[in-house]
Length: 366
Image (cartoon, rainbow, N blue to C red):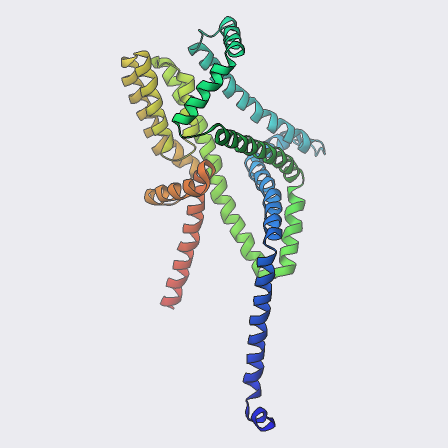
């Protein structure tokens, strides 16, 4: 046994020992992970629950920062005031709430005008009908669900899940707003702290890379997202004014839909054409239909060739085919929000891919 041990290469024996120990430890860790799966699922759910409002807060603060900074500069024109930041944040949120309230009021007024036949007497009659015929109403709902291939218990489960989803969205948005307020109040301090922590952990070289990446991402995302919001607002106003002049029915409602749709490339025109066609055909306004479609086409041509390129400047340089591919992928991964950020993400990836190609080309030439 001693001769056999002496004949072995100690270097390779040590390597085999390390490899065996690594395999054994890995198997043990995997076994522990497998046996404690419930714990890790619970831990992951807690992590995502905390991460969601942080991400929402970061997005809100990033979008509101230009407005807050404008208010802050206005209040600090002569000298610095400590209260100006808090007042600027409050006014920014009030401004956004006022815009949303205005949109809701316009929608409600439009709906009310189109269903003017509904009054307090019809509502009270409906209440009496429900009270007197609850059994018939339940039977009708049950038959309707059966025709759709659903049972009452399945519908109740779907309804419960929908309520839970709405509750989660409201909760995430509420805490996201709280996080956004803290981000806007002490964003510089938070950024400096994590920048210092990252530099200590990973080194100065990686800190510079992250700083460059943040600079590139900020330039592209700010240039795109804020530009898209301004562009959508301009298109909304232009569409509303022109449609009111030419007499298109429900001009304000259609303008709002076009503006919201214009946040996503290529979606605004489609929404606008469909809305104009449906509203005009439903009201028999055939002359206004032709004028509205031509007017919307002119607005979209002006927006696509003059307004939008000037707003986005030189920050987004990607081919239209890549835009379409990014929108498809973003919609599949993240729905509306995914489509909204898909183009700047694609532009950022393309920027670094172009830099990689330029670097490789330079190395090959040298």
